[in-house]
Length: 75
Image (cartoon, rainbow, N blue to C red; front, side):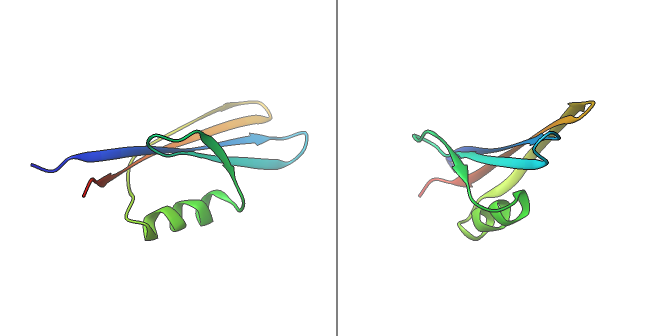
């Protein structure tokens, strides 16, 4: 039976600064701010074997939030 580990990518958009912050939470690790945009972070994780399994987006007014959940098999 395959065992999985999970990670999340969180993007929060601040309209006042007009900058998006992208953070990644890997198994057994702290939430860490990443360089680059959401697409480049997700592509890097994909190259490391992570697979996107879920996505959620919400926002109101000038504020937005996205969360991506990923998984990969534990070897």
